[in-house]
Length: 98
Image 1: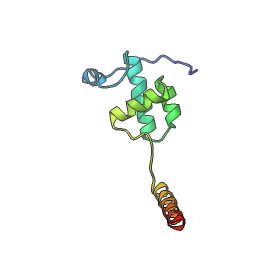
Image 2: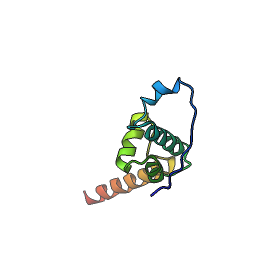
Image 3: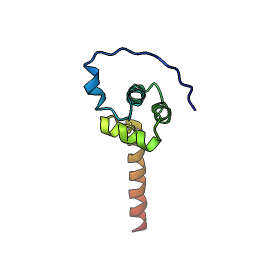
Image 4: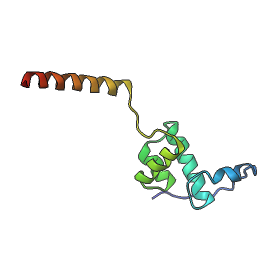
């Protein structure tokens, strides 16, 4: 459970229509989602921590990230090389069984 602190925040009125584009039932929830999404996108927190900060389940937070166009999983060059090695090994094994 996260401890809550209360802060007063002043935003330009131009932010209000933009808040409608963020998931959440209240302005507080929308701000939490926005902060958590940003922290995750900047790799400051893990996916699980960002979901917790946003007050969302992991599955719901992943859906929010998808809606925002933020990739929630990484497929690195290292992953690709590992996959290529496994595929080559599997193809060789298939050839041997023929």
